[in-house]
Image 1 (cartoon, one colour):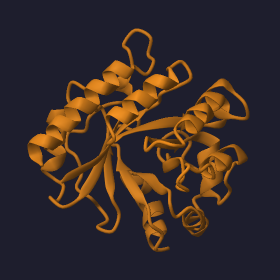
Image 2: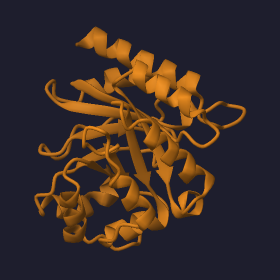
Image 3: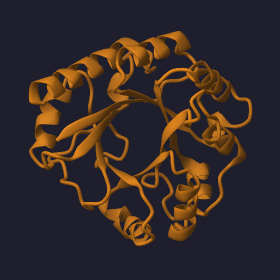
Length: 247
């Protein structure tokens, strides 16, 4: 398999923007994802202002930024509507004309998952943003929704996260389930175990497949519970060392 991106999730307004930019410049395969939901990211809340500032600061760089959409905004997008705060960020472009936000993950698994999923409306959103890669969590509970989205012929990727955001590595990683859609892997990954877990993922993924990995909980400082740039860098370094060894 080919490790395409190394995602570091849930940096927030308490992190220094210059630290995130420096890490992104140093490691081009790294990606930095913000968790977006209306209770903390609406209007001009501190996290929203912080992330918009980061976006503007990276418009002349190749730093990979992503959004993970949760809660009511997830539900709204799955109904075919894009919240204004989100749309204005998706529409922001780099100096070279490409979107600042390159990937968007819609977290359809977890929380209240009784919402309606209108596959055709979601497909219309995906087609309206052809330069953004859209990602949906894959679990057995979400198989029906993703099968319906696949039938629209929309392009999307999937994230396997058996832990449901609890930061627990699965007993076994799952091979890609739809050959025409990329698959990423998340669940309990961190600087201490990423090499071992990449070995396990590699055992079930075809050699020519592009994948990515996503870590969150184990990138946080154990005491402050805040995103730790140093831990994120070690996670990136260890993942890259695996890639170099297995190239």
